[in-house]
Image (cartoon, rainbow, N blue to C red; front, side, top):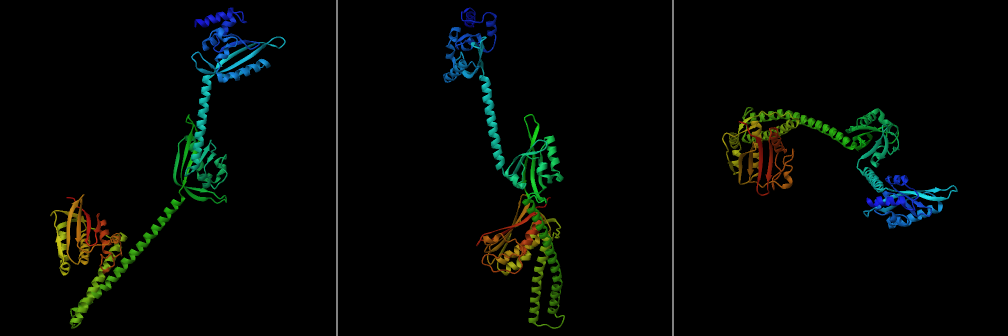
Length: 519
């Protein structure tokens, strides 16, 4: 600091100083670097700020010494500009880098104005250097931020143009289109939108309330969402709006201060999905109606057929018993065959009637607590004649004596009897095994046989109605293929299910699951 004061004192006493006393002291108080130059351009004065900034003495800076602090890359440009001003007398202004006392270069703006005599000749130059490093850094940061913002806008624009949805941006309270992506253009019929308020571009929306919704979103800053909204658009501009369904969002766009300046619209055309669902609903309703009609027809037909069949069986019994006169052994056998045929046909009709009731939802269950051991023991007596006739072994493995299922006893017996009858029918040798266990609150009853098994490609259809799936190598059996279908539906109606596993050559196992009775 002493060097600066000494230099300043030297300014005031030097023979080259043209300003003295108070003027020099005033220049020293200026925060900028102040200097003066002679007519030929050599410096003859610098203020204290110059000496402090560059860490130089007065003698080092005046004359041509000031050129030593200029960045080498800028020196030629500065000297050319200074020479041009000296020749023309025009004001001098140049931007260049100067080396501070710490060795760092900072950008400056150098300016100088000429002083002229009465004849207009330049007699002196008054100049200053202003450090603009921070300003330039701010400008660079600003330019970088603007470039980044521009790049982000362009990237966002590219995204909006490629997003697989209809997207547009509406700006201002009049909702002027400023961005329209290809899908939105296609959705609206490729009409001219950009730069237009939505009321002018899409007037058909006026009566549909969507302009009011846009106004509300803009005023409140709260988004609006709609699913499968009906929108009527005049896409082909023929004056007849087309009905389409859209999932869309009106999303408010806000500035940093929270002020809404626009609305982004994101829409997905779900017309095909809505139409398909309506078509499916219509088809389902028609199918349900057809099923009800079928079930009603089958129920009526079965009922009407049972009456004459019962009469046939009854009269056959009367003839066989000799009520209408003596009968021969051949006639008795014929009546027995008629009776067996009638019973078989009646069984088929009852199956059809039962399935019709199940499909129509008219099959009622009377749920009670059914002892499992007792029910299965009774079944053994019912199936014993058929088992003995085929020379098969029958094994029933009793379980806990107090175990009960919550079921309709008649329906549960019907299921088990059907499974046992099938097992006997398709097993030529070996045995049939019945056992049960408790799992997760359910009772699992298994009927296993040593028959030939069921082919894997036929397992998927064994519970389908009106499908007869014979065991491997077995011919088609009698019946209409409703036994297993009815059994599974009965099990499900009581809160259980029926399933099967089978392996060719190793028999089959049918599993009935029914709820365990709660004590």
